[in-house]
Image 1 (cartoon, rainbow, N blue to C red):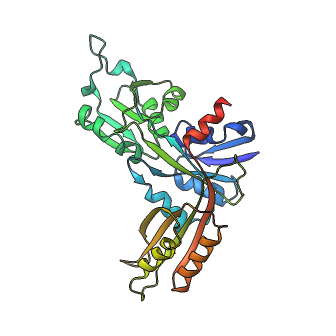
Image 2 (cartoon, rainbow, N blue to C red):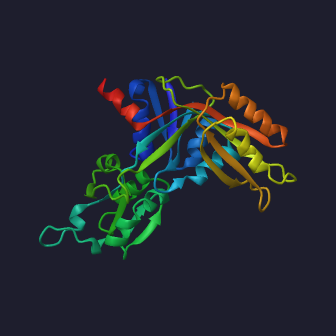
Amino acid sequence: MKTVALLPAGSVSDEAAKLFFQDEDDQVQYRHHRMISDVFLSTVNDVSQYSVIPIENTIDGSVSLHLDWLVHEVDLPIQAEWVYPSNQNLIGRRVELEDERGEIDYSRIKKVISHPVAMSQCLNFIRKHLPHAETEHVSSTAESVRIVKDHPNEGMFAIGTKTAAINNGLDIIAESVTDHQNNYTRFFLVGNKPYQGMETEQIRTSILITLPEDFPGALHQVLSAFAWRRINLSRIESRPTKKKLGSYYFYIEIKYSLNELLLQMALKEIEAIGCHVRVLGCYPSYTYDQLTAKQHV
């Protein structure tokens, strides 16, 4: 039996995990947590084997808090990644908004609550229909829907998933309120146990590089080590080391397996100029199309 820690039932993380583990759902025990810190710590403390971590979104970009946890707070290797559509909806009790003609009156909404990332994905809808409403951030979209359920007739509505609305017996007031319909979230599966899943040709390696402080031009040499070997970098991001102002590490994703000799030689060259290299994981990468295709086999 696999044990998997993740954000609450009805969250995008919950929906994404159930798609990812669809072939072995009866062999997976899900442990839901309100806070992402508790998701990480569940696996750190061996309560679960894996944690499901949202790491990047089409609209909002990198989820910096979660990346910082991977870097600064825990030492959990990345075992797999996949993407899942992040379709947000306005959720609540329709009867609270209907006028005498049965039409929705958005002016009756006093407060909208959701996870900050989900909220930022729906800014156009909020500006157009709810500029008067107070906004409040909570730990997950599922938590926001639960709060709305517990506070009827207070003008409070949530942004969240259809699954969360169904689980809490609430209505979808407006469907797909995200700013762009091609909105996807990328997830990491992290843990110490190697993941055995379906085969894929897409393998990625994630590393952290900290530059030597007394080496001008070090970043240029780092990138050159990849460039002249024609190693494709799919992402590079700088984040503060939290040691002192102006000190950064570089998070880099590489479309190469760590087993490839070219990548091994590139990392040795980078270490030779005094950089510190930390490998966060070498892992299979799955697209949404790959995962949904399995449902129809």
